[in-house]
Image (cartoon, rainbow, N blue to C red; front, side, top):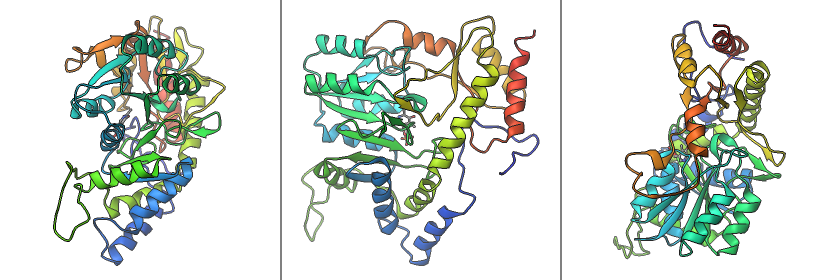
Length: 376
Ligand SMILES: *Cc1c(COP(=O)(O)O)cnc(C)c1O
């Protein structure tokens, strides 16, 4: 196992290429054949291999997870003035594409059982906005949302479900991969995700026509013609063949990364779980999380800010839980359905360093540094 060198910063979650050099082999192949761009065998291979891994019929490799959400919304027919339900507790990339489509988000609260979209709040939102066009659900930090209830509600109301599984590649809900429950699922390979291509995303679906359409939009909507002809608005959203090569290599070590993230979570829970006021992110028996970020809430005398400061002094990165969208200056004008669960999770939440390159010594150092706060 590699070691983090003395005085090197410990990150929340940073790129971790395989020890075997799988990524370089695929990238080298692209170089050797001069097939750097645009598409090529790595793109096709990455789409095929990821679809197979998660159990989806089809996949489109794109330039980012955000682009994948954008095209999922377009495929769902979301347009000007349409209402889209979106969890409030998430990264802004979940919500931004709703605005790209000139649609209107309505933000939905979390529950404590999952930290994700609260089915009761979702039901309430359906009463309030029966005309809603689509629902986006997120699997935060690799914990799956309550999919049985959310899928059932979306079916009942005949609404398209999009799963933002950007943080949950490798997570299973009742034995099935997150990202494959909805009409469309998306993954991200941004630098801090469980596997990375330096930047990139994937749209998955069992609707092969929808995926073909997404590929068409992602390559500037070029009609079948000798000349350049466009009958629809296009985007430049495709993944390059070099980037896809990194993804193919990373996919080979996904299970190893999930295993390490699980180890990190168990380590923290064992070492910190009994401290006064500490509550770890929820675990449900339906869930096999990838534990992308190990997170906890603090409701005792030690506050999140104490943790951030004391870790930063040791050159260790940690972070608050996502600030809810309905509290963001840009999004606060939109409606919000729920109580104060997401606000409390934001107020009390801490994301602990969850980098898979951490050594046993790193983990020891982190928990010792944190534990001291309870001795003061
Ligand atoms: C990272 C992330 C995204 C966006 O993915 P990019 O590839 O960075 O565009 C979307 N949603 C969530 C919840 C994320 O964490």
